Image (cartoon, rainbow, N blue to C red; front, side, top):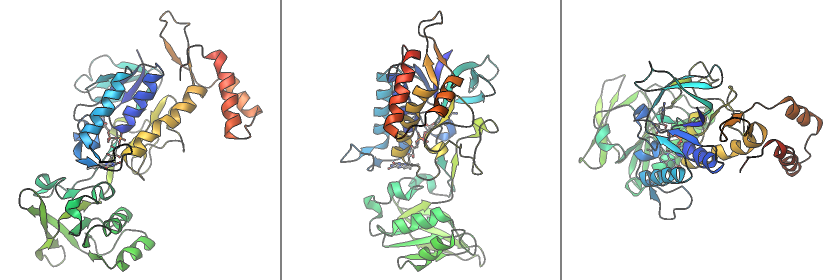
Length: 367
Ligand SMILES: Cc1cc2nc3c(=O)[nH]c(=O)nc-3n(C[C@H](O)[C@H](O)[C@H](O)COP(=O)(O)OP(=O)(O)OC[C@H]3O[C@@H](n4cnc5c(N)ncnc54)[C@H](O)[C@@H]3O)c2cc1C
């Protein structure tokens, strides 16, 4: 039985793995075999230069960054398995899980599970999209908007919600003009965002309009074929950049109905932690964050929860025959009583109290 399983392989999963492995909790990571169409390493493997991840003043290739994270996870002893987890049973501990193509076999089990399955931007699969994906077409204006191929060039955004409005306004910093293509006859965005968008001098909104093809010279995107869905008119729109803002899909099919998710399918975590509605199951990264969806926020999610879990929930014990056996216990009545009795006055006093009381129970706790 594995003590801790980190499911999936983006920045969130690798941070979790590094922290767990350094604490000698022997994590096992299932990095996926093209799970949800994304390679091991996650969404960053689908992009070129990452310029907003600290520590790389000249930027770093997305794949290179993920290779480095993988190496770091392995260095501290994470077992990485290139398989996709296809089924889980979270009804009781130890949790059961199955791997793709092995669903009929006996389940694997784990004391704790961390879901960092990420999310993927919805794509429209226009003709030409595969040719110009990441060569003009992107699903992340914040990530890609500043790259040179978009500077002072006409850009287009598809979508009519708040994200589309935000992305279009963001892109006005870089593009010469931003055209927003809205399928319906009005924006879905909130009033304030709609007003801001409509009033922007560099923005044009084309209602009742869809893109039907992405065109270019085979290397870079140059224009879009667009269609007015009311009149049927088709014409070309000059665009060196096309940004999809038609929503994201969190990779939560696996846990549907077993963990509390919001109306868009994102896992709900207790604010400021990665606790989910199921004790012993944690979530980090884009799968539970529909606001920021960045590598740095995903990577920053787990350490926060790890500190509190290590002290409050997990005890390492040598009582088992296997000296390395790890037992993950729920907070005991003792802990709950102590928490009720002594309210910490400030974060420092809380930290002190937790450390002092945790030590006698945690002979092997290494942080
Ligand atoms: C084109 C593009 C460019 C981007 N550029 C930037 C940028 O410049 N800077 C930035 O900060 N952010 C950028 N982002 C966003 C960033 O990539 C994400 O915020 C970040 O990768 C999220 O990390 P994550 O660990 O939550 O999940 P992900 O990176 O989505 O990784 C999840 C992994 O889990 C795997 N998986 C899913 N289900 C299973 C399963 N059942 N079993 C096993 N494995 C599974 C997936 O295959 C995937 O490999 C970009 C995103 C895209 C799409």
